[in-house]
Image 1: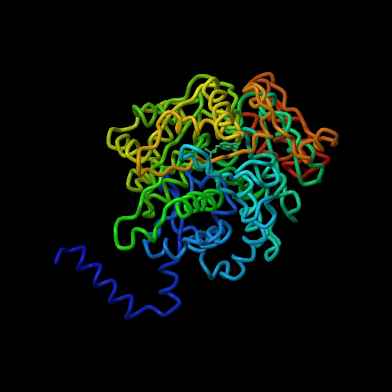
Image 2: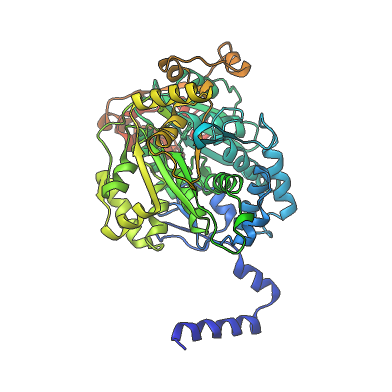
Length: 536
Ligand SMILES: *Cc1c(COP(=O)(O)O)cnc(C)c1O
C-alpha cells in the first residue's frame, strides 16, 4: 500500500473514532479560498459579502463536488429555478442557510421573470438552439444571478442588521441589474460607475432612473476596464473594505458565478437525453457563450470540472484577448478597448479568467499570483505552455467582427424569423461557421433581448418592437453624477491631502483618485463614500 493511501486510511479511522457528529459535518462543509493562495477556509457568507479576496485574488470553492450520471438523471426534469436551488445547495452549507430557507429565497427571487420558469429554450431551424436568459427586469442574463445574489444578501442583512456598500463597475448591463435588484435592500448602498457614451440609452436609463437614496450612479470617462482599475484599488485597501464593508456585485462575486452554473446544467439536461444512455457514457453538449468578463464561461468550466461532458466555446467580438489566449497563449490587452455593436462585451480585461487558470493550474495559488500580478502590472503575459495547452483543451474560441454580427442577425431572422441581440449573434455566428455534424448537439447562450440593442437591430436592417417598460424609461426623471477627466495625478494629490486632513475616512476616494490619476471625484462621491455630509 502506498504511503498516501495508508495515511488516508489512518485519517478515516481517526475521524470515525474521534469526531463528534458535528465535526464530521463541518468536515464536509464547503470552504472557499483565494486564487492567489492568500486566503483559505473562508465561509460562504464571508465570500458573499466581499469583492476580491484580501490578496487581490478571487474566491473559489476549495473543492468541487462531482455530479454523477445518477444525480444528473434525477435532475432531468427540474425547472431552471429548481436547478438553481440544487446547485446552490451544493455550495452553501445547510447550517448557514437551511435548505428550506434557501429554496424559499431562490424560488421567490426567480418568480419575477416574464416567462414561466425564468428562462426559455428556443429550438430553431438547422439544429440551432438558443437558451434565452434575458427575461428579467433589465432584459439581460445578469438579472438571473443578480436577483438570487441580492436575495441571499438580504437574507443575512435581515438577520444581522449589517450594512454593506456595493461597488459596481459596468460595461452596460451589470449596473442596471445591480441597481434594480439591490435598491430596496435595507442597509445597502449601491455605487455604480459606468463608462459615459459607451453604454446605450436603454442601459443608461435603467441605471439613472433609480432615484432611491441608497443608489449612487456615476458616469466616468474611459472604458469599463478603465473603471475597474480604481475599483480594484479600493478593494485592495483592507481598512477601507472593512470600514465600509465594501463588496462587489460584478461577477467578481462568487455568488454570481454560482447561480450561473445552472445555465449550463439546464441547457445540458434539456438538450441531452440521459435515459437513452443508461449505463453508457454521458452524451456531450457544446455550449457557445458570448464572452466579456468571462464570468459565464467560468461557470461553464466549473460545471465541466464537476463531470458534465460540456464542450465550451467562448465567442468574443473585436476585443479578442480570450481568443488570443486560447489560440496562442498570448494573454495581452490591446492598447484600446474597441467599441463594437456588442458593447456589453467590449472588455479587454476578462478578470474571471483568473478563476479558470487557477482551476487548470491544479489550484496553484502561487503560479496564479505570479501570472496575474504580472498581468495587472504589464497588461501582458504569455501563458506557460502547460497552462496554455490545458486552456485550449477546455475551450475553443472565435472572434466576430461587427459585419459578422449584423450578418448573423440578418441570417437568423431570414431563416427563423427570430431576432438576436448583437451579443447572442456573436455566439450564433459560430453555429453558422461550424455547422453541426450528425450526432452533435449544441446550445447558444442568449444574453440579452434585442429590444435592449436597437442600434444593432437597425444596422442589420431589422426592426424590434419595444416593450412598454423600455418606452416608459424615456419619460422618467434621472440622476447621475459626472466624473470629469481631471488634472492628473499631481494635481489631485493636493486635493487628496486636503481630504485626508479633513477626514481620514475619505481614503477610499483618495485612493480612487490616486489610482486612476485622471478621474477626479466630485464632492458628492466623497460625501457618499464617507457618509460625512459636512465634509467640505
Ligand atoms: C455581461 C454580458 C455578457 C458577458 O458576460 P461575461 O460573463 O462577463 O462574459 C454578454 N452579453 C451580455 C448582453 C452581457 O450583458
